[in-house]
Image 1: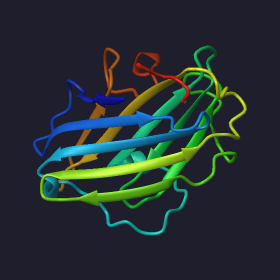
Image 2 (image 1 turned 135 degrees about the vertical axis):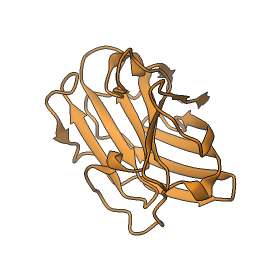
Image 3 (image 1 turned 135 degrees about the horizontal axis):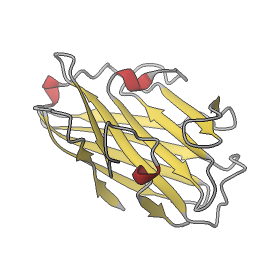
Image 4 (image 1 turned 45 degrees about the horizontal axis):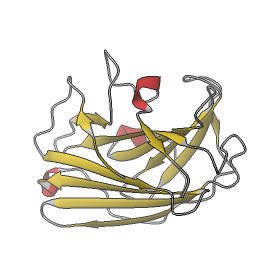
Amino acid sequence: MRQTLALHPDSRCAAVTRIEVEATRPHPDHLVLRYTVTGEIADLRLPQPGESTRADELWRHTCFEAFLRPPSGDAYCEFNFAPSTQWAAYGFSGYRSGMRVADEVGAPFIEVRSGADFYVLQASLDLGRLAHLQNDAVWRLGLSAVIEEERGALSYWALQHPPGRADFHHSDCFALELASA
Protein backbone atom coordinates (compact mmCIF):
# COMPACT_ATOMS: atom_id res chain seq x y z
CA MET A 1 0.00 0.00 0.00
CA ARG A 2 1.66 3.23 -1.21
CA GLN A 3 1.17 6.40 0.84
CA THR A 4 2.34 9.99 0.31
CA LEU A 5 3.90 11.84 3.22
CA ALA A 6 2.93 15.47 3.84
CA LEU A 7 5.41 18.19 4.71
CA HIS A 8 4.71 19.69 8.14
CA PRO A 9 3.16 23.17 7.73
CA ASP A 10 6.03 24.78 9.67
CA SER A 11 8.72 23.04 7.58
CA ARG A 12 10.34 24.11 4.33
CA CYS A 13 12.27 21.86 1.97
CA ALA A 14 13.41 23.17 -1.40
CA ALA A 15 15.13 19.93 -2.42
CA VAL A 16 12.27 17.43 -2.03
CA THR A 17 9.13 17.44 -4.15
CA ARG A 18 7.57 14.22 -2.86
CA ILE A 19 8.05 11.35 -0.40
CA GLU A 20 6.10 8.13 -0.83
CA VAL A 21 6.15 5.06 1.37
CA GLU A 22 5.03 1.60 0.38
CA ALA A 23 4.20 -0.57 3.40
CA THR A 24 3.59 -4.30 3.02
CA ARG A 25 3.30 -7.37 5.22
CA PRO A 26 4.52 -10.21 2.99
CA HIS A 27 4.18 -12.56 5.99
CA PRO A 28 2.05 -11.99 9.10
CA ASP A 29 5.06 -11.09 11.26
CA HIS A 30 7.13 -9.21 8.64
CA LEU A 31 6.99 -5.56 7.66
CA VAL A 32 8.63 -4.11 4.54
CA LEU A 33 8.85 -0.35 4.14
CA ARG A 34 10.02 1.32 0.95
CA TYR A 35 10.60 5.09 1.21
CA THR A 36 10.99 6.92 -2.13
CA VAL A 37 12.15 10.53 -2.12
CA THR A 38 11.81 12.57 -5.31
CA GLY A 39 13.64 15.84 -5.91
CA GLU A 40 17.15 17.28 -6.13
CA ILE A 41 18.92 14.48 -4.28
CA ALA A 42 22.34 16.17 -4.49
CA ASP A 43 20.93 18.91 -2.24
CA LEU A 44 20.27 16.43 0.59
CA ARG A 45 22.67 15.39 3.33
CA LEU A 46 22.79 11.60 2.84
CA PRO A 47 25.70 9.70 4.40
CA GLN A 48 27.11 6.79 2.43
CA PRO A 49 25.86 3.34 3.45
CA GLY A 50 28.14 1.53 5.85
CA GLU A 51 27.88 -1.22 8.41
CA SER A 52 24.27 -1.77 9.48
CA THR A 53 24.46 -1.20 13.23
CA ARG A 54 22.05 -0.12 15.95
CA ALA A 55 22.46 3.57 16.82
CA ASP A 56 20.60 6.25 18.79
CA GLU A 57 19.47 9.76 17.82
CA LEU A 58 19.25 8.99 14.11
CA TRP A 59 16.37 11.48 13.85
CA ARG A 60 18.82 14.37 14.22
CA HIS A 61 19.68 13.96 10.50
CA THR A 62 17.99 12.38 7.50
CA CYS A 63 16.03 9.45 8.90
CA PHE A 64 13.05 7.37 7.81
CA GLU A 65 10.72 6.30 10.58
CA ALA A 66 7.84 3.97 11.32
CA PHE A 67 5.65 3.83 14.42
CA LEU A 68 3.71 0.62 14.95
CA ARG A 69 1.02 -0.41 17.39
CA PRO A 70 -1.76 -2.99 17.64
CA PRO A 71 -5.32 -1.79 17.00
CA SER A 72 -5.93 -1.32 20.73
CA GLY A 73 -3.80 -0.32 23.68
CA ASP A 74 -1.27 2.40 24.28
CA ALA A 75 1.99 0.47 23.68
CA TYR A 76 3.83 1.06 20.42
CA CYS A 77 7.21 0.66 18.75
CA GLU A 78 9.37 3.18 16.92
CA PHE A 79 11.78 2.21 14.15
CA ASN A 80 14.42 4.52 12.65
CA PHE A 81 16.35 3.85 9.44
CA ALA A 82 19.24 6.07 8.34
CA PRO A 83 20.79 6.33 4.86
CA SER A 84 24.01 5.03 6.46
CA THR A 85 21.98 1.80 7.10
CA GLN A 86 22.19 2.41 10.84
CA TRP A 87 18.92 1.68 12.59
CA ALA A 88 17.10 1.81 15.91
CA ALA A 89 14.09 0.11 17.51
CA TYR A 90 12.35 1.32 20.67
CA GLY A 91 9.32 0.24 22.65
CA PHE A 92 6.98 2.63 24.48
CA SER A 93 4.32 1.76 27.05
CA GLY A 94 2.31 4.89 26.17
CA TYR A 95 2.62 8.29 24.50
CA ARG A 96 6.32 9.16 24.83
CA SER A 97 6.50 7.17 28.07
CA GLY A 98 8.21 3.98 29.20
CA MET A 99 10.80 4.16 26.42
CA ARG A 100 13.18 1.22 26.14
CA VAL A 101 15.42 -0.30 23.50
CA ALA A 102 13.44 -3.04 21.74
CA ASP A 103 16.10 -5.76 22.00
CA GLU A 104 13.66 -8.38 20.77
CA VAL A 105 13.75 -6.78 17.31
CA GLY A 106 16.61 -8.08 15.21
CA ALA A 107 18.56 -6.02 12.70
CA PRO A 108 16.44 -5.04 9.70
CA PHE A 109 17.70 -5.65 6.20
CA ILE A 110 18.22 -2.16 4.72
CA GLU A 111 18.91 -1.42 1.06
CA VAL A 112 19.47 2.02 -0.49
CA ARG A 113 19.82 3.27 -4.04
CA SER A 114 19.71 6.69 -5.63
CA GLY A 115 19.91 8.75 -8.78
CA ALA A 116 19.91 12.45 -9.58
CA ASP A 117 16.18 12.83 -8.87
CA PHE A 118 15.30 9.88 -6.59
CA TYR A 119 16.44 8.18 -3.41
CA VAL A 120 15.05 4.86 -2.16
CA LEU A 121 15.52 3.24 1.24
CA GLN A 122 13.91 -0.14 1.83
CA ALA A 123 13.83 -1.75 5.26
CA SER A 124 12.62 -5.29 5.96
CA LEU A 125 11.77 -6.21 9.55
CA ASP A 126 11.00 -9.52 11.25
CA LEU A 127 8.65 -8.62 14.11
CA GLY A 128 7.76 -12.13 15.23
CA ARG A 129 9.28 -11.65 18.70
CA LEU A 130 7.25 -8.53 19.58
CA ALA A 131 4.86 -9.97 22.16
CA HIS A 132 2.30 -7.13 22.03
CA LEU A 133 1.74 -7.51 18.26
CA GLN A 134 -0.64 -10.19 17.10
CA ASN A 135 0.35 -11.56 13.71
CA ASP A 136 -3.23 -12.01 12.56
CA ALA A 137 -4.34 -8.52 13.66
CA VAL A 138 -4.45 -5.25 11.78
CA TRP A 139 -1.47 -3.07 12.68
CA ARG A 140 -1.66 0.72 12.93
CA LEU A 141 1.28 2.54 11.37
CA GLY A 142 2.65 6.03 11.54
CA LEU A 143 5.07 6.65 8.67
CA SER A 144 7.38 9.63 8.67
CA ALA A 145 10.72 11.10 7.63
CA VAL A 146 13.15 13.74 8.75
CA ILE A 147 15.01 15.22 5.79
CA GLU A 148 18.24 17.20 6.16
CA GLU A 149 19.29 19.46 3.32
CA GLU A 150 22.99 20.08 2.59
CA ARG A 151 22.84 23.49 4.25
CA GLY A 152 21.58 21.81 7.47
CA ALA A 153 17.86 22.67 7.42
CA LEU A 154 15.57 19.90 8.68
CA SER A 155 12.06 19.21 7.41
CA TYR A 156 9.44 16.88 8.86
CA TRP A 157 7.16 14.64 6.80
CA ALA A 158 4.35 12.31 7.93
CA LEU A 159 1.14 10.67 6.78
CA GLN A 160 -0.73 13.09 9.04
CA HIS A 161 0.40 15.80 11.42
CA PRO A 162 -1.30 16.74 14.68
CA PRO A 163 -1.94 20.43 15.37
CA GLY A 164 1.14 22.33 16.54
CA ARG A 165 4.76 21.29 16.19
CA ALA A 166 5.83 18.10 14.42
CA ASP A 167 5.26 15.11 16.71
CA PHE A 168 5.49 11.68 15.07
CA HIS A 169 4.55 9.95 18.37
CA HIS A 170 1.13 11.61 18.50
CA SER A 171 -1.85 9.27 18.01
CA ASP A 172 -3.01 11.31 14.98
CA CYS A 173 0.08 10.09 13.13
CA PHE A 174 -0.92 6.41 13.32
CA ALA A 175 -2.99 6.93 10.18
CA LEU A 176 -2.48 3.70 8.25
CA GLU A 177 -4.08 0.32 8.96
CA LEU A 178 -2.13 -2.62 7.58
CA ALA A 179 -3.77 -6.06 7.57
CA SER A 180 -1.97 -9.38 7.80
CA ALA A 181 -0.80 -10.96 4.55
